[in-house]
Length: 312
Ligand code: BMA
Image (tube, rainbow, N blue to C red; front, top):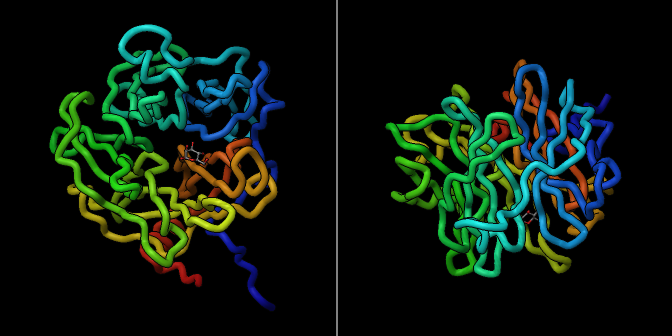
Protein backbone atom coordinates (compact mmCIF):
# COMPACT_ATOMS: atom_id res chain seq x y z
CA UNK A 1 0.00 0.00 0.00
CA UNK A 2 1.19 3.48 -0.77
CA UNK A 3 2.50 5.23 2.32
CA UNK A 4 0.75 8.52 2.96
CA UNK A 5 3.06 10.89 4.76
CA UNK A 6 1.18 14.08 3.96
CA UNK A 7 2.59 17.04 2.18
CA UNK A 8 3.89 19.09 5.09
CA UNK A 9 6.30 18.19 7.87
CA UNK A 10 3.99 20.01 10.30
CA UNK A 11 0.56 18.49 10.93
CA UNK A 12 -2.28 20.90 11.43
CA UNK A 13 -4.48 20.39 14.47
CA UNK A 14 -7.89 19.24 13.30
CA UNK A 15 -9.54 21.93 15.47
CA UNK A 16 -7.86 24.75 13.50
CA UNK A 17 -8.25 27.66 13.51
CA UNK A 18 -7.87 27.84 17.27
CA UNK A 19 -8.92 31.51 17.37
CA UNK A 20 -10.80 33.89 15.10
CA UNK A 21 -12.39 37.32 15.62
CA UNK A 22 -15.60 35.66 16.93
CA UNK A 23 -13.59 34.23 19.86
CA UNK A 24 -12.45 37.68 21.01
CA UNK A 25 -14.77 39.19 23.66
CA UNK A 26 -14.47 42.73 22.25
CA UNK A 27 -14.90 44.11 18.76
CA UNK A 28 -11.95 43.55 16.47
CA UNK A 29 -11.18 42.91 12.84
CA UNK A 30 -8.83 39.92 13.15
CA UNK A 31 -6.68 37.91 15.54
CA UNK A 32 -3.43 36.37 14.22
CA UNK A 33 0.37 36.15 14.62
CA UNK A 34 0.58 35.11 18.29
CA UNK A 35 3.51 34.04 20.44
CA UNK A 36 3.33 31.32 23.09
CA UNK A 37 4.65 30.84 26.63
CA UNK A 38 4.09 28.09 29.16
CA UNK A 39 3.72 29.62 32.61
CA UNK A 40 3.27 26.96 35.28
CA UNK A 41 0.91 24.43 33.77
CA UNK A 42 -0.88 27.00 31.64
CA UNK A 43 -0.29 27.95 28.01
CA UNK A 44 -0.50 31.64 27.19
CA UNK A 45 -0.80 33.20 23.77
CA UNK A 46 0.10 36.85 23.34
CA UNK A 47 -1.95 37.75 20.30
CA UNK A 48 -1.76 40.36 17.63
CA UNK A 49 -5.28 41.73 17.37
CA UNK A 50 -6.19 44.18 14.66
CA UNK A 51 -8.91 46.53 15.80
CA UNK A 52 -11.65 47.73 13.53
CA UNK A 53 -9.85 51.10 13.41
CA UNK A 54 -7.09 49.30 11.50
CA UNK A 55 -4.18 49.35 13.94
CA UNK A 56 -2.95 46.36 15.96
CA UNK A 57 -2.53 45.80 19.70
CA UNK A 58 -2.01 42.75 21.90
CA UNK A 59 -4.52 40.51 23.66
CA UNK A 60 -3.97 37.43 25.79
CA UNK A 61 -5.46 33.95 25.60
CA UNK A 62 -5.11 31.11 28.12
CA UNK A 63 -5.34 27.37 27.77
CA UNK A 64 -4.90 24.31 29.97
CA UNK A 65 -3.76 22.11 27.06
CA UNK A 66 -2.24 24.35 24.37
CA UNK A 67 -5.13 23.76 21.97
CA UNK A 68 -8.30 25.16 23.54
CA UNK A 69 -7.83 28.85 24.28
CA UNK A 70 -10.00 31.55 25.88
CA UNK A 71 -9.25 35.16 25.12
CA UNK A 72 -9.23 37.44 28.18
CA UNK A 73 -11.87 40.17 28.55
CA UNK A 74 -9.49 43.08 27.85
CA UNK A 75 -6.42 43.70 25.68
CA UNK A 76 -3.09 43.66 27.56
CA UNK A 77 -0.96 46.12 25.56
CA UNK A 78 -1.90 49.06 23.36
CA UNK A 79 0.38 51.24 21.25
CA UNK A 80 2.07 53.80 23.53
CA UNK A 81 0.13 57.05 23.74
CA UNK A 82 2.87 59.00 25.50
CA UNK A 83 6.62 58.89 26.04
CA UNK A 84 9.49 57.87 23.81
CA UNK A 85 7.66 54.99 22.07
CA UNK A 86 4.57 56.98 21.20
CA UNK A 87 5.43 58.38 17.77
CA UNK A 88 6.97 55.07 16.64
CA UNK A 89 3.84 53.05 17.56
CA UNK A 90 1.32 55.49 16.14
CA UNK A 91 0.16 52.92 13.54
CA UNK A 92 0.19 49.94 15.87
CA UNK A 93 2.20 47.21 17.55
CA UNK A 94 2.54 43.92 15.67
CA UNK A 95 3.92 40.40 15.61
CA UNK A 96 5.08 39.77 19.22
CA UNK A 97 7.76 37.12 19.88
CA UNK A 98 8.36 36.15 23.53
CA UNK A 99 11.66 34.73 24.77
CA UNK A 100 12.25 33.59 28.34
CA UNK A 101 15.72 34.75 29.27
CA UNK A 102 17.24 34.89 32.72
CA UNK A 103 14.23 35.61 34.94
CA UNK A 104 11.63 37.19 32.69
CA UNK A 105 10.06 37.23 29.27
CA UNK A 106 11.38 39.67 26.72
CA UNK A 107 8.88 40.41 23.98
CA UNK A 108 10.29 41.70 20.71
CA UNK A 109 7.60 43.30 18.56
CA UNK A 110 7.20 45.56 15.58
CA UNK A 111 6.54 49.22 16.35
CA UNK A 112 4.80 50.64 13.31
CA UNK A 113 4.48 54.31 12.37
CA UNK A 114 4.65 56.64 9.39
CA UNK A 115 8.44 56.50 9.82
CA UNK A 116 8.48 52.77 9.11
CA UNK A 117 8.89 49.70 11.31
CA UNK A 118 11.25 49.40 14.28
CA UNK A 119 11.95 46.50 16.63
CA UNK A 120 10.78 47.33 20.13
CA UNK A 121 11.54 45.23 23.22
CA UNK A 122 9.37 45.00 26.33
CA UNK A 123 9.81 42.95 29.50
CA UNK A 124 7.06 41.06 31.32
CA UNK A 125 6.66 38.40 33.98
CA UNK A 126 2.96 37.76 33.67
CA UNK A 127 1.90 39.05 30.21
CA UNK A 128 -0.29 41.66 31.86
CA UNK A 129 2.19 44.31 32.94
CA UNK A 130 4.78 45.24 30.32
CA UNK A 131 7.80 47.47 30.76
CA UNK A 132 8.91 48.97 27.48
CA UNK A 133 12.69 48.68 27.49
CA UNK A 134 14.07 49.70 24.12
CA UNK A 135 13.41 50.88 20.61
CA UNK A 136 16.17 48.61 19.50
CA UNK A 137 16.50 49.32 15.80
CA UNK A 138 16.24 52.12 13.33
CA UNK A 139 13.40 52.21 10.78
CA UNK A 140 13.09 49.53 8.10
CA UNK A 141 13.70 46.65 10.51
CA UNK A 142 11.23 44.03 11.84
CA UNK A 143 10.90 40.31 12.62
CA UNK A 144 13.14 40.61 15.67
CA UNK A 145 13.56 37.40 17.70
CA UNK A 146 15.78 37.15 20.79
CA UNK A 147 17.84 34.08 21.66
CA UNK A 148 16.93 32.52 25.04
CA UNK A 149 20.44 32.91 26.47
CA UNK A 150 23.38 35.26 26.18
CA UNK A 151 26.26 34.10 24.05
CA UNK A 152 29.72 35.33 25.09
CA UNK A 153 27.93 37.60 27.55
CA UNK A 154 25.85 39.31 24.87
CA UNK A 155 22.19 39.28 23.97
CA UNK A 156 21.71 37.96 20.46
CA UNK A 157 18.90 38.72 18.06
CA UNK A 158 17.85 37.80 14.55
CA UNK A 159 16.25 40.61 12.62
CA UNK A 160 15.20 41.66 9.16
CA UNK A 161 16.49 44.99 7.90
CA UNK A 162 15.46 45.89 4.38
CA UNK A 163 18.40 46.89 2.19
CA UNK A 164 17.88 47.77 -1.49
CA UNK A 165 14.43 46.17 -1.14
CA UNK A 166 16.05 42.81 -0.29
CA UNK A 167 14.74 41.25 2.93
CA UNK A 168 17.30 38.93 4.56
CA UNK A 169 17.76 37.57 8.07
CA UNK A 170 20.63 39.17 9.97
CA UNK A 171 22.16 38.53 13.38
CA UNK A 172 23.06 41.36 15.81
CA UNK A 173 24.51 41.52 19.31
CA UNK A 174 23.99 43.77 22.32
CA UNK A 175 25.26 44.25 25.86
CA UNK A 176 22.21 46.13 27.10
CA UNK A 177 19.26 45.47 24.69
CA UNK A 178 19.46 49.13 23.52
CA UNK A 179 22.52 49.30 21.29
CA UNK A 180 22.85 46.54 18.75
CA UNK A 181 25.81 45.94 16.46
CA UNK A 182 28.33 43.55 14.90
CA UNK A 183 25.48 42.82 12.48
CA UNK A 184 26.00 40.16 9.84
CA UNK A 185 23.75 38.85 7.12
CA UNK A 186 22.79 35.20 7.69
CA UNK A 187 20.07 33.91 5.37
CA UNK A 188 19.10 35.60 2.14
CA UNK A 189 16.33 34.93 -0.39
CA UNK A 190 17.23 32.07 -2.77
CA UNK A 191 16.40 32.54 -6.45
CA UNK A 192 14.30 29.68 -7.76
CA UNK A 193 13.17 28.51 -4.32
CA UNK A 194 9.99 28.89 -2.23
CA UNK A 195 11.82 31.61 -0.27
CA UNK A 196 13.06 33.56 -3.29
CA UNK A 197 11.45 36.94 -2.50
CA UNK A 198 12.06 37.68 1.19
CA UNK A 199 12.95 35.84 4.39
CA UNK A 200 12.47 36.83 8.03
CA UNK A 201 12.96 35.20 11.42
CA UNK A 202 9.74 33.75 12.82
CA UNK A 203 10.13 31.95 16.15
CA UNK A 204 12.72 32.60 18.87
CA UNK A 205 15.63 30.16 18.26
CA UNK A 206 15.42 26.78 20.03
CA UNK A 207 18.56 25.13 21.42
CA UNK A 208 19.01 21.59 20.04
CA UNK A 209 21.93 19.17 20.00
CA UNK A 210 22.44 19.99 16.31
CA UNK A 211 22.49 23.77 16.72
CA UNK A 212 20.06 26.64 17.18
CA UNK A 213 16.89 25.75 15.33
CA UNK A 214 15.34 28.76 13.66
CA UNK A 215 11.94 28.43 12.02
CA UNK A 216 11.72 31.33 9.63
CA UNK A 217 9.23 32.53 7.05
CA UNK A 218 10.05 32.81 3.40
CA UNK A 219 8.06 34.33 0.59
CA UNK A 220 7.76 33.71 -3.08
CA UNK A 221 6.30 36.46 -5.27
CA UNK A 222 3.59 35.40 -7.68
CA UNK A 223 1.22 37.13 -10.10
CA UNK A 224 -1.32 37.27 -7.25
CA UNK A 225 1.04 38.47 -4.53
CA UNK A 226 3.44 36.76 -2.13
CA UNK A 227 2.98 33.26 -0.65
CA UNK A 228 4.26 32.99 2.95
CA UNK A 229 5.67 29.61 4.01
CA UNK A 230 7.67 28.38 7.00
CA UNK A 231 11.09 26.74 6.79
CA UNK A 232 14.02 25.90 9.08
CA UNK A 233 17.72 26.55 9.48
CA UNK A 234 20.32 25.50 12.04
CA UNK A 235 22.87 27.94 13.45
CA UNK A 236 26.07 27.16 15.33
CA UNK A 237 25.47 27.04 19.09
CA UNK A 238 28.60 29.03 19.97
CA UNK A 239 28.68 31.27 16.93
CA UNK A 240 25.13 31.86 15.65
CA UNK A 241 26.46 33.92 12.75
CA UNK A 242 27.47 30.56 11.24
CA UNK A 243 24.70 28.77 9.33
CA UNK A 244 25.07 25.00 9.66
CA UNK A 245 22.16 23.98 7.48
CA UNK A 246 19.03 25.24 5.77
CA UNK A 247 16.06 23.30 4.44
CA UNK A 248 15.41 23.27 0.73
CA UNK A 249 11.70 22.50 1.15
CA UNK A 250 9.28 24.29 3.48
CA UNK A 251 7.88 22.81 6.69
CA UNK A 252 4.42 24.30 6.28
CA UNK A 253 2.73 25.93 3.29
CA UNK A 254 -0.71 27.54 3.03
CA UNK A 255 -3.15 24.87 1.78
CA UNK A 256 -6.28 25.01 3.93
CA UNK A 257 -9.02 27.55 3.23
CA UNK A 258 -8.26 29.37 6.50
CA UNK A 259 -4.67 29.88 5.26
CA UNK A 260 -5.66 30.74 1.71
CA UNK A 261 -8.60 33.07 2.31
CA UNK A 262 -8.58 36.08 4.61
CA UNK A 263 -7.41 39.67 4.82
CA UNK A 264 -4.09 38.58 3.29
CA UNK A 265 -4.44 35.19 1.64
CA UNK A 266 -1.77 32.51 1.24
CA UNK A 267 -0.04 33.25 4.53
CA UNK A 268 1.25 31.01 7.29
CA UNK A 269 3.22 33.17 9.72
CA UNK A 270 4.63 31.51 12.89
CA UNK A 271 5.61 33.70 15.86
CA UNK A 272 6.18 31.10 18.57
CA UNK A 273 6.61 27.44 19.44
CA UNK A 274 6.84 25.13 22.45
CA UNK A 275 8.90 21.95 22.59
CA UNK A 276 7.59 19.20 24.85
CA UNK A 277 8.41 15.48 24.84
CA UNK A 278 10.25 15.68 21.53
CA UNK A 279 7.36 17.41 19.82
CA UNK A 280 7.36 20.98 18.56
CA UNK A 281 4.05 22.78 18.63
CA UNK A 282 4.07 25.84 16.45
CA UNK A 283 1.55 28.69 16.62
CA UNK A 284 1.01 30.63 13.44
CA UNK A 285 -1.13 33.32 11.96
CA UNK A 286 -3.18 32.19 8.95
CA UNK A 287 -4.18 34.58 6.17
CA UNK A 288 -3.74 37.50 8.64
CA UNK A 289 -7.18 36.47 9.96
CA UNK A 290 -6.82 33.45 12.28
CA UNK A 291 -4.52 31.87 14.82
CA UNK A 292 -3.63 28.20 14.23
CA UNK A 293 -1.44 25.46 15.64
CA UNK A 294 0.50 22.65 14.02
CA UNK A 295 2.81 19.99 15.45
CA UNK A 296 5.82 18.01 14.27
CA UNK A 297 8.45 15.84 15.83
CA UNK A 298 11.54 17.90 16.64
CA UNK A 299 13.69 15.27 14.94
CA UNK A 300 11.69 15.57 11.71
CA UNK A 301 12.09 19.34 11.73
CA UNK A 302 15.83 19.03 12.28
CA UNK A 303 16.05 16.42 9.51
CA UNK A 304 14.24 18.84 7.25
CA UNK A 305 16.64 21.66 8.18
CA UNK A 306 19.53 19.30 7.39
CA UNK A 307 17.81 18.43 4.12
CA UNK A 308 17.62 14.78 5.09
CA UNK A 309 13.83 14.59 4.97
CA UNK A 310 13.54 13.99 1.26
CA UNK A 311 10.88 15.84 -0.71
CA UNK A 312 10.79 17.51 -4.04
C1 BMA B 1 4.50 40.54 7.12
C2 BMA B 1 4.09 41.01 8.49
C3 BMA B 1 3.09 40.06 9.11
C4 BMA B 1 2.01 39.63 8.16
C5 BMA B 1 2.61 39.21 6.81
C6 BMA B 1 1.55 38.85 5.78
O1 BMA B 1 5.26 41.51 6.48
O2 BMA B 1 3.51 42.28 8.38
O3 BMA B 1 2.49 40.70 10.20
O4 BMA B 1 1.34 38.53 8.70
O5 BMA B 1 3.39 40.28 6.32
O6 BMA B 1 0.70 39.94 5.51
